[in-house]
Length: 367
Image (tube, rainbow, N blue to C red; front, side, top):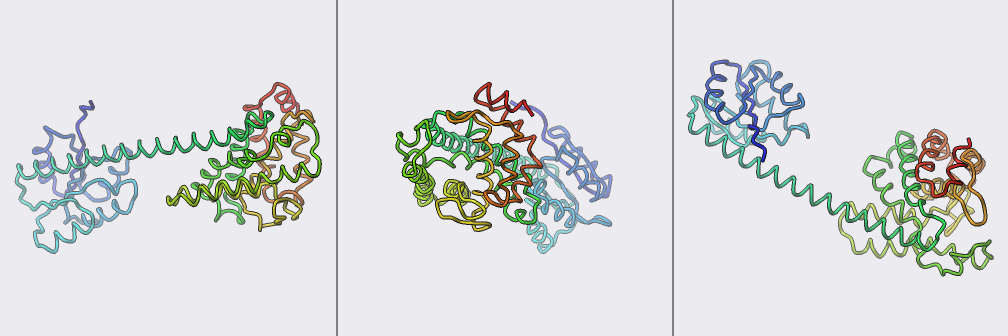
């Protein structure tokens, strides 16, 4: 159990008033003091915020109402409870203080027993609220972890049917994040790629080949080149993946999960589309291809190039890079290839860290 005393900040421009409140509270709490509003705000935002603020209203330069407004407008400090302590005892004064977010209102001259009781009540409420928020945060984290394990398990199930792609999920996930972060400030992508979307892209990337579950083994596991008919069957994994995710979307009402599934659907359905319109399954071109699919396409192809396959050795990073550059403007969005070039060493580092075979590692080390 944590026995450390809770902290109270007393704000008053009259030192004698501060002394009285410190005398009343110091046996039970750690008490800090500020003689003006500016100093109070600096203390609150100084890295060790108080658990409660006792705030005078009538102060020069910056009154208590203004201090409260500054603190309540800041997401970091808005939840610190404020009790106004003032000689202003009109109902309208109290109403204004409570409207600004104060939890209580004490009038001067103070009554020590009442001050102790009101402060104790607010501290108890704060402890219960903090404990509840902690439990909610823990539960949210548990749900998030459960979702991520479920996603990864589904993706891994699809990948286990293709025994040549062991670390593919982990690598492509990280490539996608690297590209998204590189594109975050690009004028064409800045409105699309905020921190939340980048996080959701990272988490949805493993589902890009979920549709492979529906591809027959004779096609999916064939060691040699596919015939035209077999390739047509292989291409159906994009539609199968989209259909699977759509069914999940229909069952979800949570906005965040729905946005996650929307990105996952775009990735699964469009990561084989090409910038010039020659890809599949719809033959989309340019910006008509969802940005998530365009980002995934670069990540997926780079990983295929540097990976060992039964029909080819792993390519060096330089060779993979040159192929991506050559296909800029035909297969790939040129802006995303520029982002790849900016982050190419990060790509190589990810590929090295999560390589499946020594042969791949050796090729990547050969610049």
